Image (tube, rainbow, N blue to C red; front, side):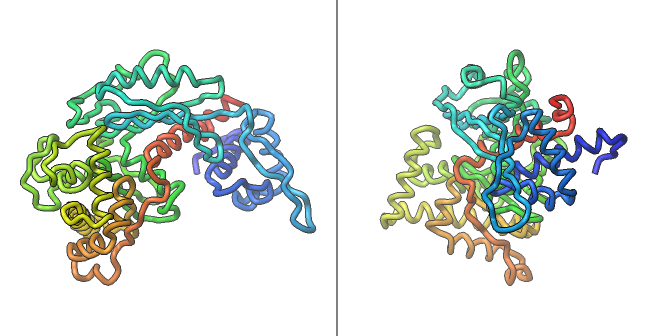
Length: 385
């Protein structure tokens, strides 16, 4: 708990706690439920709700009667309250969405791009089209590591040391940016299968694989903000040269590009994703060659998970993107390959391997959450009230 100097500090601290509780709840909180959750009295809760409602940060409506006792009310986002925008920049597409207090996410716009940093100009134009006075912050998920929160590297697109400050300067709203796999993991910790999990790993599999280590729901960043590049570790014995500059990266054996290589296709984007889905469909229909390609992908995934479980000791591992398909089609093979890579004493209690429940929108959802985090800070609330 931060050091609180005055009664005003305590009040705004509790206002932030109340807004956070409303935002994180699985379903709308009642005023009485919020008071119990925060450990405050009914009168204090009533005063906080009144202040936040006057500032157009909360909206209170009567709750449906549930027997005897004092009537209570539901705490909802104010119709004029702040919103956050979120963008997910894939290798060939972009999506823009809006998040309200309470977690409701609405897609606003989407499109394809030419695989150059010009996509930032396209995104800025879309943001300006949809923005209103309610917009408080924009969060962006990007499919590449971001060194020191500024220098973007996406080697397979030829984006080498792209300066984000240069592309996000000018008339942008307040903006936060992070790696897509890390944000997908954050989304699972906040809204999905990893809620209340102490130590966990999350992997987002698209053309290749990226991940994050989560401790108490927080995605770990490392000294230069680029922790989690597990796909660029030599976990499966490959001798191929990766575009990142390393030989034998795990990413060369896991993901859509690995499926394409198995059929002699060039790794690619756009049409490459469609071809990958066709290979999965053929495998599901019993095609032997496609089935072997999916087996190879799943086995390599499991071997890498086992190695990382030895090092990091997670309670659970979640997989999103293509990982959900691999679990659906080859769960037994993934778990078997993972177990074979575990140290013997770990095999009796291996980490749970779970399909992500947030789904394909994990990076977008995570970007929305880090944007909304800026709203749920005492400093922001103090300025608003």
